[in-house]
View 1: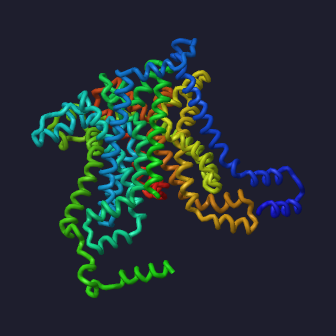
View 2: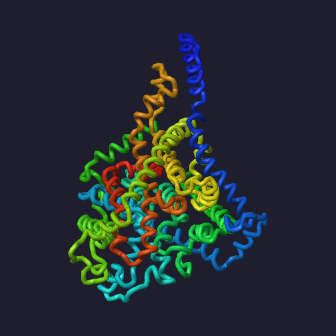
Length: 313
Length: 301
């Protein structure tokens, strides 16, 4: 391909270092282009991950105690036998992610179907969908804090209007997690809508038309034609959204503060690990939590990609 | 053969008028009953829009109220608006500095990530370097805290915590994988022939990338850049740990607002509005790009 041509060009010119370099660059452009970004990410990921792994095997407490001893798997044993903070945090992380994902995908599919065919005022709905998506999560957390305030919040004013007694929402020990899930649904359902809508518009019309001919009603066509065809897109949406839902931090920290509230009612693994690291300097312990957390994330990703491969076939 | 027969089948079904078709094959009327479905659809769409916009509207309303009015449920919607909260927040709390910090960090980290990310995405797309791409995309999966602990350790020993460099570096870490992901799916959709013919005409491969591919991918870079700017602007956790009093970004600034003035709802809502408005304006003008960025690679199966 290129070598003969560039060699011919070089023959016409005075042999200088520049030409040689550009030839070399062209031959190695694959790595020349990719290497800087990979080096950047590699240094900023692989080195910290290795460090986290190392820290998880020590009793490091940051600057509080300079000497750090290697203690093997002790941190992991401590964490895994911790039924007061760790396991509830695992439960909350999975509950938060699971419920949020189910709501977001179901609602998102409903809204995407509503938007599927063109209609008047489409532009305005598009704008409405974009607003929560780009709103700053911390600001969103503050906004919901006011709306769910037990005394002056709009949520309780609404309930009062229909005669339901006021709820504690965020301040309640049992209701806080549900309320934060609601916030997540508000902010991120639009993203699921966008992804599913892109999937719907790229579907071919024929299967739907054929089913229509055979007299299938709207529900039958959705459940037996559209939904199976949409499964790969649905799984992509779950993957993209799931990664971020597992790692949710901003809204939880903004609405409930350190430790996920005074009774740790919204303390997920991310909030727990953050607190251990930056509020208590328990680097060794928090590293062990993070390694376990990371394994949970990788595991669920892996399961989903397997599922996607099975669906695509 | 098969293609041909498929085609004829299709044209038959399309051109056949309902009258000539047997009863059982005739295309049924819209199943839910056209009018009932239309009414349902309009109602549902209004509900969706209300659900998404009303909370933001409530935040805006509260930011225009005095704290006395906020506590008065009779004045939920009817009150005399005031800009006092905004004046307080912007002047007394120096929010202009925070706005600049947020803007600067988002802008520089996006620009640098584009410089690193676009060629990388190009190489990964053209040479199908899926394993290399995986390394970069790993950054999206890893929980930020696990990186923050070592970063904090190293950077505080280097006396860099609180400087712009660290913040920009950490935000690039969010931006770069996003840009590589979006640009890879963009380059995948760009036909290879354009570059090949440019090379036949005498351009080197890198020359073809510079003069043909890059100008053609301006839209993709805009998409990636805008999205990365938004994510950087909204980022909270990295800035919470790594920013100093002089480099504090807006999300951290509003969070601080709570800890020392948890009852000043008017001011808090004004601060929250101040963070959200610029990014929303950018989003409204660049709608098309945001949508294509959010859905990049989602439908390829």
